[in-house]
Length: 169
Image (cartoon, rainbow, N blue to C red; front, side, top):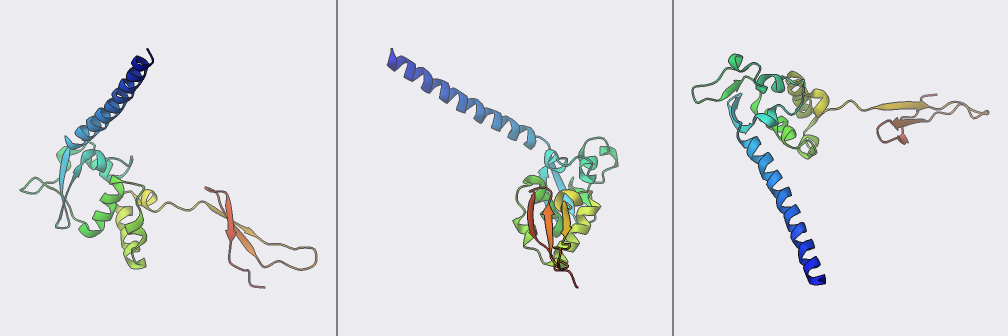
């Protein structure tokens, strides 16, 4: 009887794993059914409609939502043409695919990051790619004897204080 229970438990575990795997494959199949070919500034990309529409309210979401298909220009080979910087669009597309990976963006030079911010703004993705930090400066005051020249910065997201710039006295 204990052997039968163990086998049932093992079978239930395998069934659960299989159902999870099947659901993952179903999501992947749905995503792959709507492949979109892009030509962004001469650079070719292949992605899914789901990726392009993953940020509500963005220009890409509007373009590829299906609401404006009749207005979207395509090239002879069926690519949607967007007259923007293709190299920078690669960073945007990678972000849309996996919003948790920012390493490549963080490694850009200041000039490249500014250019990417302009592109993100064009696509309506600036806040998603470069969220405005939610911080409050806490300025020193007086300790009863002297003026204090220190500041602290409170990150409202993490509720952690860090040292801020010193005040000129």
